[in-house]
Length: 192
Image (cartoon, rainbow, N blue to C red; front, top):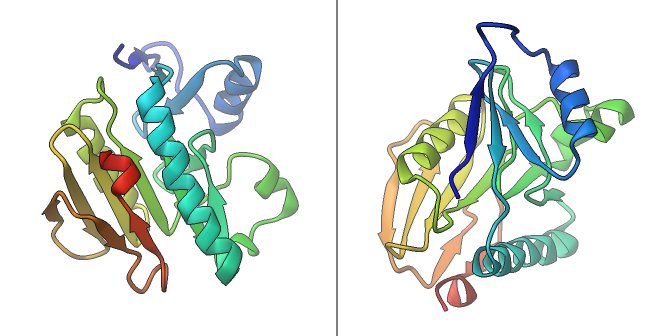
């Protein structure tokens, strides 16, 4: 199943509050909003994608529990990016410094910031080009490090702020570099 995109712009340009109300009224749907005002309805993931995503989030959360450097978010969290898009990466991390600048109300809603670190895990039905565009959007909005894990081709695209992307073929681990100091993602369960 591919995502369903509804172009509402001829009728309405959704505000953040309207998008939040639509998402709250349709809790069983995974929704995103592009910076251009297109509403995206994401299909549910299959078992293998869900298993891989759970392992990825678990490893990131375990590292963060030890370091306590920030906050970890799963794929159900929507972030309000500076360009107006409302995006939900498969896994994300925000430094404590930036998270603590938000009010409690902002923390309870769709946080109005771009994560410092994001991961997109390509599922069987995801368009690679669409995910690459999404990664560039994260970087353009202040993300410092991003990984696009392409299970089908056993590749990882690494996005770094202000640099060209790097493509790795079948890496066994990934380093969180200076953004996530000491974090190493073991890809054994992702590829396996």
